[in-house]
Structure formats: C-alpha cells, structure tokens
Amino acid sequence: MSSDATRIGVLGGGQLGQMLGLAAIPLGLECVFYDPAPASPARMVGRHECAAWDDHDALARFADAVDVVTFEFENVPAASLEFLAARKPVRPGVRSLELTCDRVREKEFLRSVGVPVQPFAALASAQDLDLALATVGPHGVLKTRTLGYDGKGQRVVKSAEELAPAWDALGRAPCISEAFVPFDREVSVVAARALDGSTAVYPLVENLHTRGILFRSVAPARVPDALADAARAHARRVLDGLGHVGTLALEMFVADGTLIANEIAPRVHNSGHWTIRGARTSQFENHMRAVAGLPLGDTSMDGPAAMINLIGGLPATREILAIEGASAQLYGKEPRDGRKVGHINLVARTRDELDRALADAEALARRVNRLS
Ligand SMILES: Nc1ncnc2c1ncn2[C@@H]1O[C@H](COP(=O)(O)OP(=O)(O)O)[C@@H](O)[C@H]1O
Ligand SMILES: [Mg+2]
Image (cartoon, rainbow, N blue to C red; front, side, top):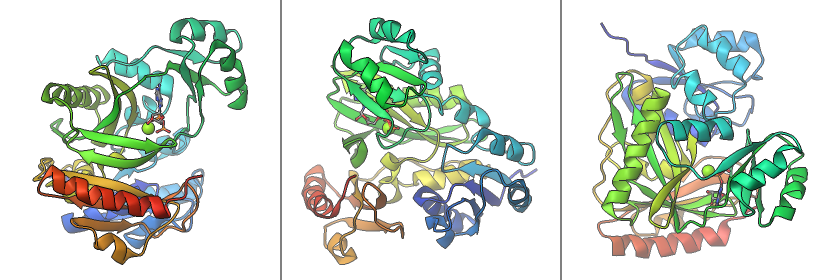
C-alpha cells in the first residue's frame, strides 16, 4: 500500500519555502504555503494561503487542501501546530519543534543523546545570576531562550560584572547563559531522515558568520576525517533522538580539535544551500522526499562546493554569472539591511579552482552586502 503524500502544506513562505517548492515540482509534488506576509517569496512556486497564524478558518482550509504538513519556519505558534496536527500528519513531528525551539531544552536534549555541549545555565530571575556565573564562568554568551535568529537576542558577556546589564539589555527575558567557546572554526552537518528511519547525511560544512549572520559555507570542511565522521555521527544521533522526518542542520564549533554543538535547526538550513548545485540530491529535495514518504537521495558531492550569501543588496545577475562555476539563486525579496535576498552557489573540480571563484564571489558580495 502506498502512503505517499502528493500535496505538501508548508508553514512559512520565505526563501526556504521557495526552494522547497522548486524541489517539489520535478517530484510531482504540489506545495501550498501558509504565511501571514503577502509578499512571501514562495508564492512564486505554489499557492499561498495568506492568513494570520491564529486564523482557524484559514488553517482548516489549508489542512483540507494538503496530505501532510511541514514547515520552513520553526516559530509557528504551538496552538496553530496542534490544530493542524489534529487534522493531518505534521513532518517533522511536534517533538522536533518542542526540543529545538527553546535553547535550554535543546542543549539538554543534545547532552541526553551524547552530543557534547558547553556548560550552560537557565536564567529566569535575578537569583539565577550567581549560579549562572558559577556554572558558565565570566566569559559567556547570553541568549534569549526562544525566537532568536541571525545573532538577534544575544549578548556576549566578558566579565562577571557584565552579566546583569546584558540580561537587562535583553529585557530580562528567560535566557540561557552559555560559556563562550573560543572556536577555531564553525561547522554544520545537514542531514535528513526518512519516514522509515533511514538517514542521509551530507559532508561536513565549514561556515563563516559576519555579525551573527552566515556569510560563507564551504563543503567539504577542511578538517581531519575522524572529526568529520564524528560530526556526522552526532547528526545521526540528533535525527534518531528526535525521531525526525525531513532535513535538519546541526551547528557545531570546533575548538581545540573537539566538537561542541551549538544549535539545531529542525528544517532546511542556510548552510545547506550549496547542495542545490554541489550535491547529487539537494537538502530541499531530500526534505520533500522525506515528508512525502519517498526514499532519500544520494548526498555525495562530485567536487568541492560553496555558498556566499547576498545580504541587504544584490549585484547585477550578470556579475554573478561571470564568476567561474557560479550560479545565482535570487529570492525575489525587497532588499533591506541585514535581510538575506539571495545567494551565490559555486562548484569546482579542485579546491584551488574553488578558492579562486570564492575570492571573486566574496568580493562581489562584500561590495553589495548591507548588514544592519
Ligand atoms: N557560546 C558561543 N561561543 C562563541 N560564539 C558563539 C556562541 N554562541 C553563538 N556564537 C556565535 O554567534 C553565532 C550565532 O549564534 P547562534 O547560537 O547560532 O544563534 P542564531 O540562532 O542567531 O543562529 C554563532 O554562529 C557563533 O558565531
Ligand atoms: Mg545559528
């Protein structure tokens, strides 16, 4: 008996939704996007249900129109998700969201499945400040437990005296205080898990952030094989521990030759955009396959690959295409400071060839990028 779903409801209609929708078409899948924003990039590749997250009539209409529900945006209100989950399968499941939407629960989960994390403490009231300092030490990062992204809702704390003012600056919201990791590099693993529990894990990616926003991803990361294998094994532990169905990303630091997990994105992720050109099956296609109950595709790559984000501004498309091995992926969004509006993907035969193209692509992006 076939349990394949063909109509996929996607919560969120940003660029991740757009790229999911593009991957869905050749698989014969049809996407419906739910997003309160009228100008959602995904409206170009599927029907757009434009309504508020608490509009039950619209949610019911959406649930009726699809076989299965997935998301490209993880901050969907819990009540809306429950409403949908009562009507249609939600993949990945509610557990994947619950254990990753709160930075404290996320780190507890990571530790529980044997993935190393730095010392951390929850901060809910002024009484917790001393314990947080004792657990984490004076050099830390304070982050709101929920809703942070692209470095928002975070303060680096450099001494004991800075902790209380940093918490004030975050509006005394419930926070996680975590030790600052003096990392040598940042890496991530993008991986997918199918409905039958089989997994597909991409090569390790090395990421560079500028002011908390991803600027560059390069795959495979230049680290010893044993480290890359360990990182990919951690991603499998996370996939299985969550009982995840679909793609996710596990972000990690490499410090002193060891891995420390930073966070999980329970969805397709910016550090996996290179897979559109650089891997045999993209992270978006594998997510769609998983959600539709189809087998996963090959995650291997034929040569090194990279991605450069275009943030707050765009060059002329012909300038991107003039770079050796480059392809453009533009989201159709109005440029605004700090907003991701597209990316450049690069593929090459050798690392030297990739490095040359990277130098050109980075120079181009630096010229147009406007961070907030
Ligand atoms: N504990 C830490 N130690 C050192 N750098 C950190 C730490 N936490 C975050 N950062 C830096 O800030 C970036 C964004 O933080 P992250 O926790 O990934 O939040 P976001 O949800 O905004 O991506 C990281 O990619 C890293 O460069
Ligand atoms: Mg992050």
